Structure formats: structure tokens, C-alpha cells
Image (cartoon, rainbow, N blue to C red; front, top):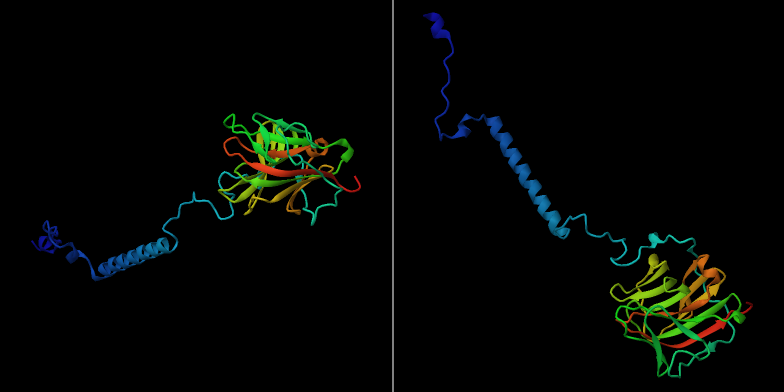
Length: 272
């Protein structure tokens, strides 16, 4: 009988609905309270970080140094040449040959214009104007530099009415192979592209800048290097084998956003 009395008696479970805290020790209660406080502090920190930082930590948002959407990335340049050092000033030039565009058709005149690609250009009251047909066309109005100008020459023209995707072309071989400097007002930037076999490769994004009304732009050709300038101030240069032989230079615009230009002129560089 003594052995039975000394055996431990089983503990009955607490009745259903009873307060479970009564079964916790004081140390366990302190631990749970500490965890609750820590969780509240972490939640408060997260809320404050999101509030101060704009409330978003989405990794898909563009970084500050990324190229604007829809603009060429300078790293995408895959041509045979390279971006060259921009000269501090344009080279001296001989007396220019100027076209006043005072006629009914583009043909004729001192610069012997031609149109490359689908679409058309026409002179209108002394301005060179893109046609509006056909829709989606991007014709180029180009002049071929006379051989008497030698290897080094300059083309200059004034923007009268700027528009998106309008600009200068150089190194023109045909409608599928050329270089261009075009403007995008959405990003207030100009883009230099190399079009090869109809595929455009971004060379450089330049901006913020304006393709402003009444501003003159220059294309200077020396050997295989072309320097671009605005109001006679150089801002970009590129060297590439495709530029050495080509002598066609001019302007481009789309039929959906006609642009106008005036005072086109060409000149040989002194010493060429």
C-alpha cells in the first residue's frame, strides 16, 4: 500500500476554455512580452522607411544613371569606329556656297539636291519642307559634296521648324545605310544613331538640349571623322571607316511631323 501511495499522480489537463496564461511561468511571460515589443518596433521602422523613401522598394524602377526609355544607350554602339575627341572649334573654311531655295522644285540650284528614301521634300518661300505623304515615311534631302571640295568639307543648315525625329544625316550611302542626329522633345535630347542595313544602332545620347528654331547646325567632315556643331560650337565627333568615302549629307524628317530648314550651305575646309 505504501508503494502505491508514493507513486506520482497524473495531472489532469486544464479544463477547456481555461486561461492558458495560468500555465505559463513568469519567465515565459516576460519572453513573450519582449518578442511582442520587438515585433512592434520592427513594424514601426518599416512603416517609417516606406514613408520617407516614397513607399516603394520595387527593383524594376529605373536607376538614376540609366538612359531614358526609348533613347539609344551609348554602350550599344557596335560600329567599326569609335567616338572621337571633340575639337574645341571648327576648322577654318573657304567661302561657302549658299542655296536660297528660291524655286519651285528641289532639283537644280547650286547644291544639286536629291531625295533618298520614300517621301519627298520641296522648297517653299526659301525653306526646305518635308512632304506629308506617304504616312510614316522618313525621306532624306541630301547634297553630294563636289569633288572639287577635296576630302575635307562642311555642311551647314538652319532649323526653322523643329519636330521630333527630324535632324541631320551624314555618311549617307542609301535609304538603309547612313548616320543621323535626331531630336526627341519628350526627353529634350538629341540622339546620334548609325543605321546599317536598316537597323539603327545607338551611338550617343546628348542632352538636355534643344533642336531650337533659328539655330544653325554644322556637319564637318575630315577624313573618316565627322564633327557635329551647333552655332559653330562643336559638341560631338565620331570616327568610322564608313564615313571616309561617303560625300552625301543633308536632313531627315518624318511625314507625320514635318520640319522645315533654311539657308543650307557647303564649303571646303581651308587646305583641303
